[in-house]
Length: 37
Image (cartoon, rainbow, N blue to C red; front, side, top):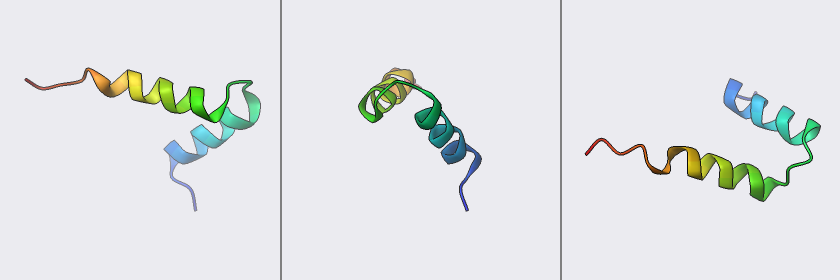
């Protein structure tokens, strides 16, 4: 079974022209500056 997050990512990968690397980069950049300091 997939989690809702995994299902969303899989669906995005199927229907998007973005590469796997682009999706990983987007996810990394989104949470990179979420520091609590």
